[in-house]
Length: 292
Image (cartoon, rainbow, N blue to C red):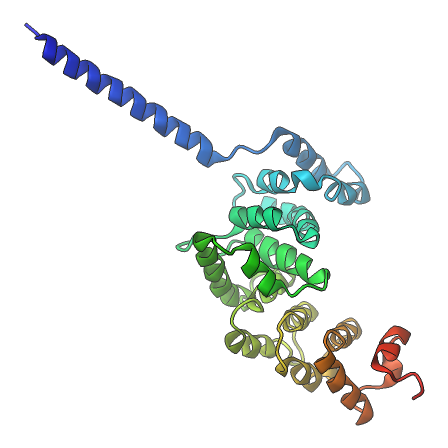
């Protein structure tokens, strides 16, 4: 015969088991982070090749309030190294560079929370594009120094700070991998520039050497542009004859970013390393060289 006490214990145990199973089910649902349905509908249009490319490009920027949800929809269950990932990456980039350019603390923090690899995981292709090509690049386009801005965004978030540093560590090997597309390696170089300058500057300088792919030159130039160091100007000038026309013009933009760099540029014009005719009228005016 089962006593009242035994019956109560069994009932209590069964009740506890039901609660535990329910809690686990709830946790599983949360961890899956199902994308917002409105965002899914927009993403389906972004990926629809029957819609004109220009219309899709505009669509990627038309819903700033849904940017985080759109990113979640784009990367949800996305397998890295696949053709599907490669097809989605241009749209992942467009959504996130628009967000980076808005320079909103909460939006960027949420994007980084989705995109930062865990400390025991590698940097995935789409993550590199988001972090380097979207967040860093977008902030820099607003003429804001991205490294201190990201430090500010991640302030008080030790887990995200650790994951960010891990991602930066991973970016060095990613950038040096010749098997990856050069535009993605460009994004990794933008990330390298966010590391401690004692480590990042020598690494980026290696990518200024003549004969490298234009995307790698560009990534190094843009990366060095985001580093507040007096070393930057001379490093860029040392290799300036080896850049493509487009990268040469980017180098001039980088040299115009701060007064210290502008002073070095004036000296380079004075000693003939740079022709004044290579500058546009606005640059000449800023440099105070109108009469030369």
